[in-house]
Length: 319
Image (tube, helix red, strand yellow):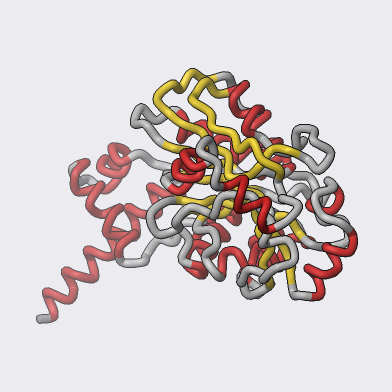
């Protein structure tokens, strides 16, 4: 009995030595084998044993390590399928460059797939910044579909609708939504969405394999208001009804519930694709958007998130 305990203790001693030589002293497994007078295979097993027995605790000493930790915690806390956290810019709390770069990399990775996919895209400043960073790509096997209309109230093309920017960068079949973002009445909305040329686009959006959307806040500088899609009176009515944010025009409250009436019964956007069957990724960061981001991930309006460190930490703290 004692001999077995001694043997086990000696084994852990050897594992600790091997682990120290590997992780602290930076020796190769061949060097460890020579130092301890054992085979390379035994050295490899001892290093693995040191980790499995908790004798070695590895810490990555790099700023990105905190991002990885925050991403893992967010993914677990909100049962998300994809989370990426980028370092916050210490000199600015508003720049979206890091989030846009990470989103562009994720979009590019999806577009490089040889298997045909349907990608749905929303709108917004961060998403537009991400699309603009994409390299030119030939992807005839894929389809890109817009979730929202591309016509502003004055009849011009909506500036932050990115379907045409995407079409310029990525040579794939593109399906825009040739509609106003918000119709003038519920009746007009129903008439527009029932058009034969619109129905296939709505059906395609519902089948999206992956979707990228922005989250707009409903504060005094709400994108829907600043870009002219809703009036000041409508913004105040949405705020009074509890609205905190919107995704492709659909306004929701801090519990993730859609606001009834006001503008939601006039939004021409397609419904968000199923989060059970596909991946819907939000690109969002910043204090103004925190209530909306929290509601979106907590209610599972989205099941993917690309954000920055400050926002991630605030979400974990309860927003």
